[in-house]
Figure 1 (cartoon, rainbow, N blue to C red):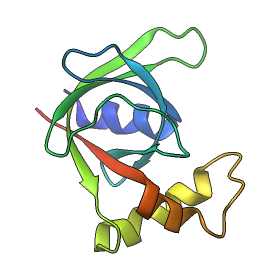
Figure 2: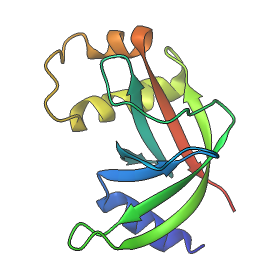
Figure 3: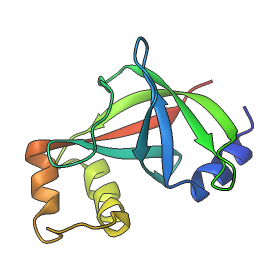
Length: 124
């Protein structure tokens, strides 16, 4: 897979389709940060297919114009743990990009206790 094409497509993508083994693909809001697609899911956030830490999934990026598939890439799923350096790096960006956030002052705490942040990292 062409890393430059992947990075360019993902920088422009605000949604992706994520499919885990044995499940249907599901549309998820995402933010591309430092070579990974990040999704917030769980209680109070978007429903997502089972995204097991250390698991795998396929990510599909579609055209905003005609919804045609642009890319399909395999990803490794990793949970971003609250309080870690990775959490401190990605969560402020996720918060700033999250549309219609009604609890911006407490959303990070809510995500840490009631939701999950997952990193979907491209695999060869």
